[in-house]
Length: 155
Image 1 (cartoon, rainbow, N blue to C red):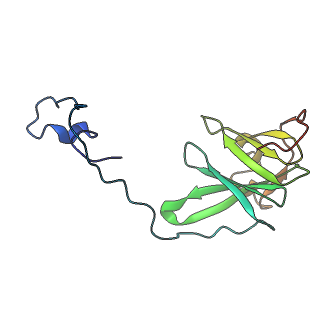
Image 2 (image 1 turned 90 degrees about the vertical axis):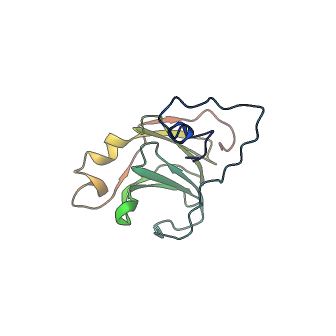
Image 3 (image 1 turned 180 degrees about the vertical axis):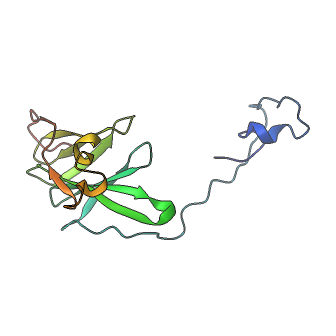
């Protein structure tokens, strides 16, 4: 979030009056928000290179796609420094190159060099009793749906 007179309406009118709309005739100089400066966690679990990490829109999950043909879904509570494996999504026959969350954070699409796109749902990996799939630890699941008409890798 930018904090300047032109991007933050609550700062624009210090006297409580209605803020003046920004003008295209005046330059606005804003400092960008600070970038993260320290590592809060190192997530292990893949057996090969991680090629992509996608955060769910609600911020509860991160999906890491790897060359090891696996997508790991992490339950994230960064305020407490806690990241737990919610599920290991297995099913691609080639390295996983892409993962994307639905706008409501309930579904995850994954793509791989095997030419498949797979659809997964959050309810599927949490029905075992919460994060990690209950007492038995993380569950490895099959995809809900597979789209496999691509002839080459999907990125």
